[in-house]
Length: 75
Ligand SMILES: [Zn+2]
View (cartoon, rainbow, N blue to C red):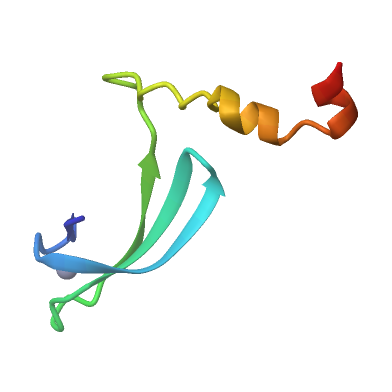
């Protein structure tokens, strides 16, 4: 992820990230330009879904039977 300093427009680096919620993170950044040295916070936030993820795989019938107790299998 590229972060640009809004003061000098040089490259900056993320020094720390603090997850506030699973969909919102604060990025603590420092400008790489030694003459600038601006330190600042950027927000990284989930916006919206473009394509739904694949559905989680359902367990096979073999795995379901394996997890049953003997009494449940006999029933
Ligand atoms: Zn800068």
